[in-house]
Structure formats: C-alpha cells, structure tokens
Image (cartoon, rainbow, N blue to C red; front, side):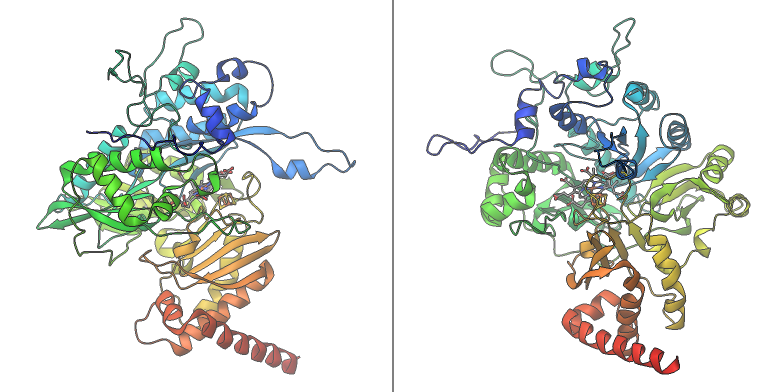
Length: 599
Ligand code: SRM
Ligand code: SF4
C-alpha cells in the first residue's frame, strides 16, 4: 500500500507535543521504565508509565471512597489498584474463557467482572504485585489486554448475533476479526513485560514483532502505527443496516455491511464518530460518523489502514482534548480528509451505497440461530457480574457455563448471549437463574432492558457523579410510573454516565443523563434507538432526586401528544426539546398543585 508523505513541518515550527506523546516517543515502543517499576516495591507507577500502561490494557486507579474517608485534615493515602480491560473482538468468547475471567475476578480482583459497552471485559481492584500473574492468566486463556485501552485501535465491535441463516453475520464477524488482527500493535513490549518467565527468561509471543524490513534494512516494529502510535484512542465497529446494535455511528471508523441475497457486496465506510466532550472546552463536541465512501469486502483492511494512517499523520499531537479523528476531520474538512484517505488508499473511493441504518436489535430473549440451534440473550444490568445478598448472578452464570457449555457473546448493551443451545435448555437456564435470585430477560422490564450506565464511582477517576450504582434505583422508581402511563412495552434507550465522557453513549439515546457535579445531572432528549441522531440538552443541573419526576413528565407529554407508533426520541425531536420542556414544566407545576390540594 502506498504511504503518502507525512505533513511537512518546514514552514511552521511543530507545536509542543503533549506529555503523553513525549512518554510514547521515549518508550521504545511502549516499554519505557515499566520493567524496573514493576518490581520496585512501590504501590504504583510513575506518571509516564501510567500513560504507557493504558496501551497494555490497564489503568492505575484508587478507591475514591477510601480517599474521602480521611478525617484528620491530612490527605489520605491512596489505595492504588488497577483496572484491567481484556479485548474480546466482536464480543465472541468461549464458556471456558468467561469462567476463567470470573475466577480471576475472585482470585485477583474485587470479586466482580464487568461487561463493557464495547463488548469487552473489565476487572477492577488488581494490585500491582499481581498484575503480571493476571496478564499471564489472560494469555493462558488465549486472550489479550494489549490495546484494550491506549492510543491504538481498541476492541473492535461487531454485531454479535450468531445468525447462520444466510451467512451475512458470519462473514461480517470474520471480517471484524481479521481487521482486529491486522490493526493489533506488533510491539514486543507486551510480552517482554508480562509474559517473560522470570526464571527461564522464556517469552511467549502474543502479537509481536513485525517481519517487515524497512528501507534501511532494519525490522519495522510497527508498520501501521509507527513509533508514537496514534494521537488518541481509535474505535471501530461493524453493523448491518437492519441492525445497528453496536451504535456504528459513534465510532471513529464504522463499516456498514451492504448485502443482497445472503452476500455482502461491500461496506459503507463511516468516519469521525466520537462522543466524549469536555464542557469547559468549547472546542470539544460529540459527533456522529460521516459517510465517506463504499468499499468491496476485500478492501476493508486497506481502507481501515489508510484512515488510521491519516489520523496517525494528521491528528493533533499537542492537545489531547482535540486529538480524536472527529477533530482531524473537522479541521481538514470532510472533502480534504477523503482526498487524503484516497491518497493513502491508492485509489478513489466509490460513493456510499444509499442504504443506511434502519433497525436495531439488542438480541435479548430466545432466538433460532438458523442452524437448528438457539441462542439466549440474557440481560445483565449495567454489565456488572456479582453476587450480592440473595442476588447471585455470578454463581448462576458459573453454573450455566459449566453445565451447558454454551458459546458466549458480549453485546454492546453490556449483556450476554449464550449460543448453540437446544430449546430444551430453556427451562434449565430459567431454573438456575431463579434459584439464585436472578430474573430471566423476559421478566426484566423493557425500560431496564434498554438502559445502560457507565462504571463511574468509586473506581473511575473522571466521574463527577454516580452512575452504575444509582441507575437501578432510578429505574425501580420509574417502572410504576411507566406502567401507569401504559408505556411498559415501549422500547427507548435510557443511558446514564457519571461525567460527560459518555462511556455509556448517552448522546444519541432517547433519554441521556450525564453527571454534571456530585448528585446533579444534565438531561438530554431526542436521540433514538437507531443511534443515528444526537440528542439535545433538555435540562441542566437536575438533582438526582428529581430525575424520576422529570422523566415521568416527559413520558406523560409523549403519551399525551405523540403520533401513532412514534418513538419517544422521534417524538421529542419532532415536537422540539424546548416545547417538550414547556409542556412538562406546566404538567409538573400542575402536579405540585394537585399534591398541595390533596394534602
Ligand atoms: Fe470510556 C475514559 C470506562 C466506553 C469515552 N472510560 C474511560 C475510563 C478509562 C476513565 C479514565 O480515563 O480514567 C473509564 C474506566 C472507569 C472504570 O473504573 O472502569 C472508562 N468506557 C468505559 C467503559 C468500561 C464503560 C462501561 O460502562 O462499559 C467502556 C469500556 C469500553 C471498552 O471495552 O473498550 C467505555 N468510553 C466508552 C465509550 C462508548 C463506546 O466506545 O462505544 C465512549 C464514548 C465514545 C467515544 O469514545 O467517544 C467512551 N472514555 C471515554 C472518554 C472520552 C473520550 C473523548 O474522546 O473525549 C474517556 C476519557 C478520555 O479518553 O480522556 C473515557
Ligand atoms: Fe468514568 Fe465518565 Fe466514563 Fe463514566 S462516562 S466511566 S464517569 S469516564
């Protein structure tokens, strides 16, 4: 593939590199001082290593609640531990791999695991002294944490449905796997650091070491990324027009599979999606990906590589707030960006196929696979697998995995699909779940099923408000209100995050609730299940205690004024968020009046 020259810096001096860029540059392909720091007896790593570690799939964190407990006026000592994210391309794994991940959570983590909004697995609470053991167990499990975080291609998402009827899903899933392998970093640092046997010095190779030889005769370590990798995280996803379950438009790079008669003709290439914002920096914004062009299946790897390389060479390396691909496109302009991608790609891009997303399926419940077997979409609230009191989801999952040995897939809604089942397994699964105080998906309300919350407190260092720990309670109070309105069967997305970074994708949902400050949230309305429209701010600084009433007011407005079969998001968008607010505020004032009269 022809590689165009990088931008010239002859005319203007290059802006100062960000500290993360400096650390990457000095790291010798992501190794840095980590080998020494790993065994220095300290609880954590240096600032530079903390940045490099992300590319190895781990974040240094501390329990923020323990931090707060200092009462003597002094700064409390931070209890450092690590969050570790394991890649699961397209969410596909085996029963053994998931069982092992659950065991590792018990043995080395905080006793839980978390299924993420990008179909991966997170562990929390691993201490530094056990990081290496953890990574070796992940490797023994034939998985990797390399590039689960960091300035590289992250876990590639793909519709996980095991539908074998016409071959389209399997073909797309195989393409996503191929691309994940193609874009995996080749550095040997990962196995130098984590997989070297301390006694024999023997290394188990995971992804490393390119065979490519450069013009000077030396091996090219990272043929795609180069020495300093990408300016920022990079995310890719694969979806189908009739099923955008992975929210393809929120990815830096999206592939929408265009198919006819059971054959994928090619992919519409979408670029520049990304949701995170910093409210104090007006230059930041959420964006949905833009339609760039169409490629046949055999060009997917080449076009992805071209887009990645353009971002590598033209993305902002001095200001990380505006370093994602969406800002590169915004700065260059879409046409200039497309021209540059075509230059790297080596040929012009065909225009996009007119097809676009028109459906969405979370794959929850029982479904035929098309090969005589069945799969069961099992709702895991906020992706957290735990045993707490009478609710023993972790134990129930263990039993299902051990007894039935199903295939497993993680959805981008933080839930699970058990695959390759017989219909006779239905009763057995329900029995196991009920015996452990867990509801089947069929018993979970539509409202809860379509909700998501990010991790937030106590582990996330960026959280300003609660999310995972409070959304279940909010839904408990909303469920009777929704039932009273006769909307229990209505599917709409309710997504909550503990800060504006948007890890549960609140900005294209029907109702987005985003942490603003402790106990207060910004509400957004007017996105939709299809994921192809950003929502708009509805109200700011709403106390958590008011959220139930505020949402009930919006739903009452929807119930009263909607047109037939109109979804909540479409209704809010058509009526206008300001008009919904006026209506809902009048209703709330009336409701308060009625309460006063009644008392
Ligand atoms: Fe995220 C940072 C958790 C999906 C946008 N995200 C974080 C960190 C690592 C906090 C940090 O930097 O210290 C969070 C770890 C908290 C913890 O204690 O576990 C975190 N993000 C998550 C997960 C686990 C949320 C979940 O509930 O599942 C998701 C892991 C996905 C994965 O498996 O790879 C997760 N994060 C997302 C998504 C959704 C998506 O990708 O589909 C987004 C919005 C899409 C996007 O990228 O724009 C997202 N996370 C961010 C951002 C904002 C990025 C930006 O461009 O502004 C940050 C902060 C940053 O990068 O500086 C962030
Ligand atoms: Fe943390 Fe914010 Fe992401 Fe939630 S949205 S996990 S609070 S960074």
